[in-house]
Length: 478
Image (cartoon, rainbow, N blue to C red; front, side, top):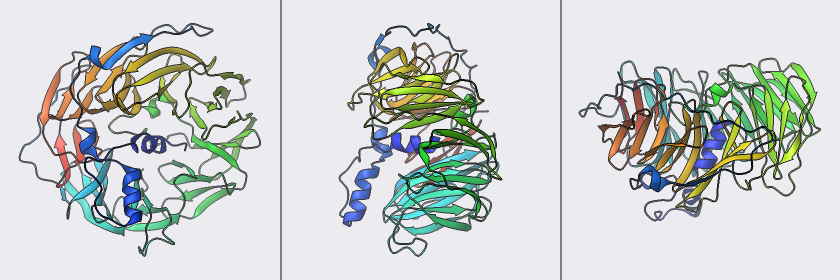
C-alpha cells in the first residue's frame, strides 16, 4: 500500500474491542474482529511522565557521514479556548455507532460512520456556520469499512462486504464516490483494498492493480479512465511526487493532497516513469532497479522531494528521479520486519519505524536510508498506533502518545491519543477529555469532555469529531 491513508489504516487497524462482539452473522463477526477500532479502548491510557514513557536511548554505530543533532524550533504558544459546553451535535446519529472518522479541508469537514447494524453513513459540515452542508446520506449495510479518503473533488468511501446492498456487486470491496458539495453518489468501483495502490488528487484517482498489471487514472466526477497504463507496477510502487511538508500529518492523520501533478510508477521491469496525472504522458523514464523481497511479505516505497526510497528484503535503496546516479542498495542495520518505515525527519531525511510492539512497549528507530544505518533508537513504553511527523518533531501516537525531537530527545508525554495542529502544537484525546498541549512550555489546557467515538480532524481553529451522539464541531483556538 503506497498512500498515506493506506499506511494510516494499516497502523490503526490493530485495535482491541472494549467488550466482546455481539451475536452477529459470521461475516460481521469476522469483520468486527479484524477491524478492531474501539476508540474507547484507545482512550484508556494511564498518565505517565516522560521518564516513565521513554526507555533508555540507544545510539548505535554512526552513519558513514555522522548525522548531527537537529534541535527543533518549538512553536509559539497557541491561544486555546474551552469548548462551548452547550454545543449540540451538528449531525445527529440515528442510533449507536461502532466507528467514525472525519477529514477537514479548509472550512469544510467530512465524516463517515458505521452504525451498529452495519449501515454506513456520510455527511459534511460547513465550519463557518456549524451547519450540515447536506442531509446525512445512508449507503446501506456493509460487513466492514476501510474508512474514507477525501480531496476537493470527491469523498471516497472504502466499503467492504456489501452483501445484499444494491450499490455493490457480489459483495466485493467497493469505492463509492460522493460529491462533496451535494452528497450525491457520483460512481462506484469494485476493487480490492489490499491488492491495489491508490493516490488521490484534487480531480483524479490513480489506482494500480499490481497483480493485473494495470494502472488507471480516474476522473473523480465521472469515474471514467483519463488514461490507462498496461505495465505491471510493483506493490507500493505507485506514489505521488510529494515534498516533505506534504507528508506532515497536520489536523488529522494523513498528509495533504499532492500539489505536484505527476505520479511515479515503479515498474516490475526495473524502470520508473513520471507521468502527467491528467494526460498520462510519460514525462521522464529512468532505470530504477528493484530491490528483491527475499521472502518479505510486503515492500515499502515512498517518494519524497524527488527521491524514490525502497525498503524490501531487509535492504534499502535511494533512487533520485532526476537522472542522477542511484545509491547502491544497502543492508538495513535494524530489523524492521513487519514495520512501515515513514519519512519523519529532515536535514538529512530519516525514516522512522516502530518494531517489537508488545502492547506495553515498542522500539522507535530512526534510519538513515543512504547507508541503511540506525541513527538512534528510543524505547517507548506505549501501545503504538502510528508515527506522524511534523516540523517540530515526531509524534508517536499511542497509549500514551509521545513526541520526540529530530535527534531522539523526548519532548512530551501526552495522556491519550494526540494529533498535530497547524500551529505546531497538539490536541490530546484522553480519559480526562480533550486538551491542548503547548509544546514549548509543556502546559496542558483543558478544553472539554465530548464523548469522542472516532478519529477527529481540525483546521486552525475548529475541531470536528464523531461522538456517541453525532458529529460535533468545537472551536478550540482563537
